Image (cartoon, rainbow, N blue to C red; front, side):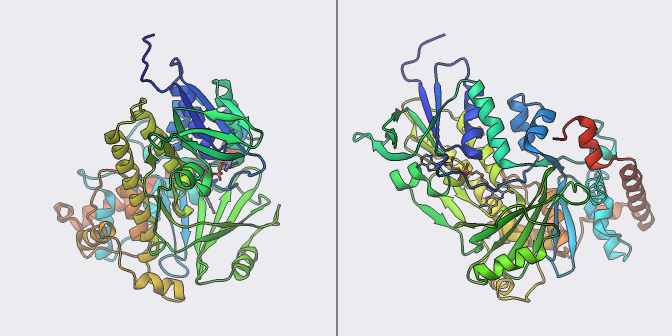
Length: 503
Ligand code: FAD
């Protein structure tokens, strides 16, 4: 192997939560064969944030890139399959819809099916939109199967993610990372030494006296951002004016009834409540805004809504929505909660961790730390955060609710231009502006906009190539295909057991 004196020889990851162990696993695996050491520091005394159970389908490509076997992973993390998120009471009290990881049928003449549905709606003949989507039909019936590979089959029109125990996932990845040579140090970082010449982080001192030096540091220290903020004073863009929820209370309950292959998010007076079914328990929490409800009332609201006995005391969490001004500053890259936080309404945090790791590997530096690379990384991650912010905000503003102070706050809000422009294009003719980056593709935007009663004034004019009868027949045929395929799909819990993935 060619010896490169400019190459990074050592990477130190601070933090052993989901972010830290995902970063350690990916770096150890993808840099193997190179003379780079990867170390990770974590403090059991400080612990991890202890929440983060619902994911997006992209997690599958993260696991696959590390050659992690699905059955082994699901068994180790008590995972269930996730087909999407059910949103209750968001458009109006009493409304419900599922945002699926998939589509409503397949395009007709290259035009997405929802455009035909809009025409059926104008004709006064549209069924409930959810009945035209296979992933929704199986989610509602607690069924699951892996997607079919033949694109002609309705069973191919979806993706899936997992709901898992994040603590067990971190432990699983720790075994993986240590098996790939990562050195773990237990201890609390008490001092961060900076290089006086360039302001780079040079070494971290632990409470047991050990000093860990490295060329590159990955800050996965959680909300405190020990390196990116406390040492390098990078700054934080506070997005609370758009997403004002700033607290959460979480509590696990016993697993009851069938295993639902979806997460539920129920809108409340001053926030919303999550329900995430795992094999061994159900995760619950109430995300809320402290300007509109007290902690005591928020706790009572959560406990009053539970459908099974609790397994632990409620846990209080505090956060400020926003992002670090630079995700990468000098020789420190912040990933996970140290990089920023957006409320977990669409389960995006672990995905943003994955994006951060992927981008870092793509622009892996040498000891010169070129500013153009750092700027590009920051630009990409900044756009990713903004796209998620806009999509989350859509849930709060595409609503007819004005029954409490929080909902009225959203009514009077000036939206970011990027979201305003997207909503206006949609309302005009159901057109979705597709962005350069962003995790949520048009079907996701369609699901939330239509699910929350944001109906465009016109549909795509090309739909008029079909007669009313043809549109009617196409809608009926799709509904029947969805329903027949759903009936033939196995029960979710039974499917997990048959795979050998039950714990
Ligand atoms: P942490 O878990 O806080 O880990 C920080 C690590 O740094 C710990 O190991 C700690 O010991 C270490 N550390 C800190 N300081 C020191 C020090 N001085 N010395 C040594 N070690 C130190 N994400 C999702 O994708 N889906 C969800 O459903 C979801 N739900 C969430 C709900 C809530 C209410 C919240 C707040 C977050 C949620 N998230 C969710 C986000 C998710 O929990 C985090 O993104 C994820 O857990 C990563 O956290 P982390 O590893 O960055 O930080």
